[in-house]
Image (cartoon, rainbow, N blue to C red):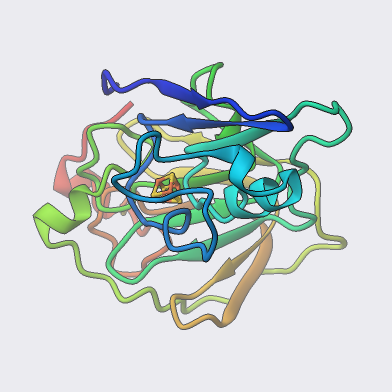
Length: 217
Ligand code: SF4
Ligand code: FES
């Protein structure tokens, strides 16, 4: 686990928390067209420059769970998206959003109960989370999805994300997989997703982790 820590940016109506253990610098926060996050400014994040609704809206853009917020009026915390969705990124991780229970998440990582970026190249030093190692190792997968899944009765409920030792991510719950093309490709309740980087049927595991000698908790 990295030594990076959680930083709190206090505001009169809402605090913002940034977890350096999870941020992979995608920039959904800094690109937002308002004054909440400005790169290079001290402090970078200033919640009082926007309203608390805007804080909530921008924080929810963060795909990794690095950003979370707390409103001071106590009325609304972030609630999980109504549907659990796994998005396969072009040459990158799996972005997962919904009501999540991720095996391996620390107790003090509330963001990953709602949004997370999971390693699928096999090289992250912060597994099960992505740390951008896919860039260094030149991981290639364009995020096509072949199978359709068996569907589910109704969306929602908790999505459990477990890990087979030295093997795939084991997902169970109602969820959809969206291909990198943006196509809603798969719906179902159970899937083993490759996290070693070697499957020929990505994003699904095809057993290649064994021959590859993949080692992970
Ligand atoms: S949106 Fe989240 S992961 Fe992306 S740069 Fe901001 S804090 Fe980091
Ligand atoms: S985890 Fe990659 S093939 Fe099984």
